[in-house]
Image 1 (cartoon, rainbow, N blue to C red):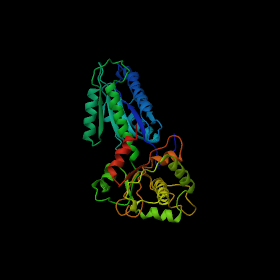
Image 2: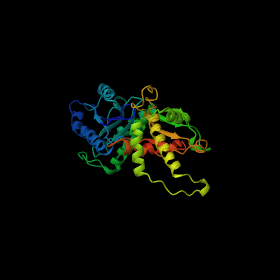
Image 3: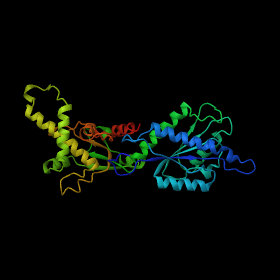
Image 4: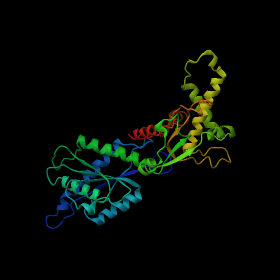
Length: 356
């Protein structure tokens, strides 16, 4: 797996194949073992082939070591998932199961339950029962059920089920990836735009993130004191000069800048982007004595105020930092989401869309 620029592991999806625990003379459980485990394997394959982390790597999926029919097996599954770093669970079943014994009781995992709509022992009863139990216990779970009845031995996942599983998977990976990360606001409210008013309670209590705040003057301090990676800056500047064309100047003649001034401002905004990248995620290659600045803020997204006080005196920082990924690195790398004017909801809309 490619190295993450963020502190914290990528979320893992865990598949929980639950089963009717009754054995006895008819061995109900034994007759369902293969079908139940095949459902788990099919779900895992679907996720692995269609979902990726924000760095481009396929998601990691683990399956319980056995089907889950009684509480002891639920505990064994939970123990394995803790060791594997599972943040997301999908419970799958073709049949009735003992709901409160087989359900995922971890309050920190993001949960879904897929009940198989088959011709024999349909999973609808378990799905309805266990979702009610989840609600009763205050443990939200997404219910997934097929529109059409299929043969009990049908191993293909229907198109509507695929869509529901993948929709849940994308949302769950995005939500779990944001947990414990930061939103970095550089500056504050921009020109009275309501979208740039940071709602710390929403970010902390709903998204499970934290809000970090840095004054815009920190960018000037780092420029003035040389607190940036000079080699990285030169590489980014060379790329920007090659790829980014300066447009025509529509200002009146008396307000037009000289070519020298335009070149100076071009370098300024490239250096700003490099410094903001360091503010977000740190940089181990900063000059000696800058160990504090090298740590960064573990930010998965950031916003820059800019207008008006900054832009009345300095150039705006319009680069979205996507170019710096291409300019400085090669291969798969995560996007760096930075919104101009500190419009926070746009940053999170973009972050969610990066998980595909």
